[in-house]
Each structure stands twice: as structure tokens, then as C-alpha cells.
Image (cartoon, rainbow, N blue to C red; front, top):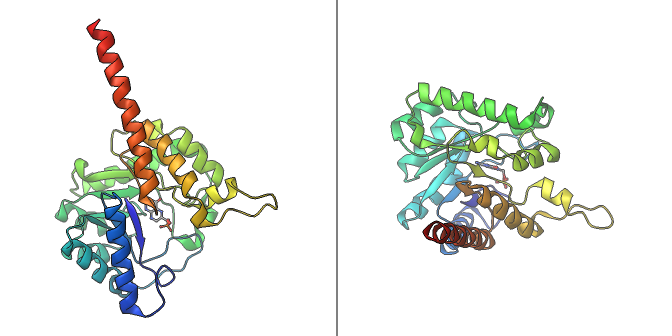
Amino acid sequence: MGILNVTPDSFSDGGRFSGIIDAVEHGLAMAAAGADVVDVGGESTRPGADRVPADEEIRRVLPVITELAAAGLSTTIDTTRAAVASVALDAGAAGVNDVSGGLADPDMAGVAAEAGCPWVLMHWRGHSRNMATLASYSDVVVDVRDELRERVDTALAAGVRVDQLILDPGLGFAKTAEHNWALLDRLEVLLDLSLPVLIGASRKAFLGRLLVDESGRARPPDERDDATAAITTMVAELGVWGVRVHDPGANIDAVKVVAAAAEARTRAQESATDD
Ligand code: PMM
């Protein structure tokens, strides 16, 4: 899943129109590099970020989704708002990526149920402005699993089919670096829920802090792609469904390496049974 953030700071500041063209070009480039789906978002979810009004969110994402859908790309709408998801689905989005797992907007489940489309339920405890204050767990892995299971139950009760659902532990959302590493280390606890799992580690702050230089300065976001690909290798090996990344290329290579190794393992097992 390639990340396409259509926020004013993400693309050309040469005006609204060139911003849209740049965003569409970037989406097409990620698809050409091998991304299966392009995730289009119009509201920043970075820690501390303020909310943007729904009509502004729609204004940002709608032309981009419309263009990408017309070009035959599969897109998801990254939003916590049912109204934004609904408009995006009508414009050709193939699914919804909801970082609040349906918690932020009680109408989201109804929109997903009616559309019958894939719906990513991410683990979330509150909007970006105050999420850092909510990073308190008794056992982060078990708590995230249990809270996601509640989101699944709520979705199913609202008429969403189980085969629409994809789970995401929400790395960095009300989570410290230690929480993120614990979730990655014990991912099997989440995989035990028997639903597809998506991982979003790409360029996140915990990687910047891991890769500090000698003066203690965190590695800048656009120099965290090698570490991101390393995480992709790790989680692909564990059998996740997908990764949400800024730069698909190296991550696709990582997935191919893991798939080739898995095939070799299967062949070796088959020939051992033949003998
Ligand atoms: N992270 C961000 C935004 N949307 N969606 C899902 N499903 N999982 C994530 O981890 C996730 C997300 C924030 O990262 P960005 O600012 O780099 O887009």
C-alpha cells in the first residue's frame, strides 16, 4: 500500500491545481513501482496535529481519487469520517483505511456495511492532538489485541462482513517506541485473530530514534526507508497481509525475497515427504 498524503505540506506549494497534479503523478508512480493500492489521505495524523474540517478534507482528496480511479488504480481513502469515506467510495475508492477503527465516527460502520468494501480497522485511542497522553497499557500487545477485537465485534454487529476487515496495530498511535517494538516482536498475538494484518511503520519517529547519529540527532524521515524495508522483511516473514509505505520499491523487493525463501522451504519439505 503506497502512501499518498494530500496535505498542504506534502506537495508542491505552487497552488491547488499543481498540488493535485503532483499528487496524482506520485500515486501513478507508486503503482508503476508495484504498489497494489494507493492510500489517499487529506488529514495529517501526526502526533499533535490539529483536525481539518470535513469539507476541506474532501476538497483535497476527491480530485486525486477520481483521477487515480479513472486511471484504473485501486485506492483506499485514509479517513476517520464517514462523510469523507462515503464521497470517496462514490468517486471510485476501493476501500476505507480508518485509523480510528470506527471509533471516531459511529456512522463509519454503516458506510462500510453498505459499500461492502475492505475496511482497515487500526488500533486508536484518540485524535492526534492528545494521543501521546493515552499511551498507557498493562500489556500493550494483549491490550491492542483486545481493543481491536472489540472494534471487530462492533463492526460485525453493524452488518459489516468479516471478510471486509483488515486489522492494524497502529504503530505510533498512542504508543511509545517500546510499545511499537513489542507489537512487532509479538505480532503473532494479533495474527491469531485470523484476520489480515496491515503494518504501518514507514518512516515513523521510532525508526528515526533508532538510527540516531553520533550527536544524538534522529535520522530524518526521508532517510528511514532502508529501516522500513527491514521491518517489511520481518513482518512479511510472519505472514502479514500488507505494509503501508512511502516508497514501495524496496519493500516490494523485500516481499519477493521472503516469498522466494518460503517457496524454497515448501519445495524442500515436499521433496522430503516424497523420499
Ligand atoms: N499511519 C499513518 C496514517 N495512516 N493508516 C494505517 N492503517 N496504519 C498506519 O500505521 C497509519 C495510517 C501516519 O503515518 P503518515 O503520516 O506517514 O501517513
